[in-house]
Image (cartoon, rainbow, N blue to C red; front, side, top):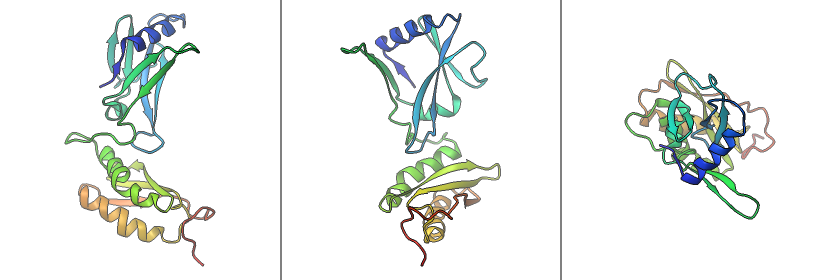
Length: 195
């Protein structure tokens, strides 16, 4: 899971001590996990602020909570502190935050995001576009959002039906449908505009 180096632990422990809050911890999570804009975060976590399904990792003199839905994105993550001439810097390297390793126990959302990131988006990138999973409904409909050159593109229906939808439904048979929630009325940066 997450490795916090000894220097990282020392830095975090000192930082938490300065908060004047008994039993304050850290909470680690990934915003927009499985997408190109994924961001790994560490935040203060006062007693009672952790979520019920967070996983607890005890360290010497402090605790770390990891958000359950972020666990796959934090696999092999390393938190480190390196001293430098300006004092130092805490770094978080999470190599799976944008494209997590998936396995047989991966969630449906993780598998959809993996295919979008590893197979669909490289092709869309040649047109300056991308697509992300916005939502996965209870009835297993993948709701997607197109961005970049795909937003407002006159060929997005073809891209969705013949490319994205076909690929997702072939590789993930439990999906029932694929929908697009993108507002395509803005054609300012569209790769292809209808005449």
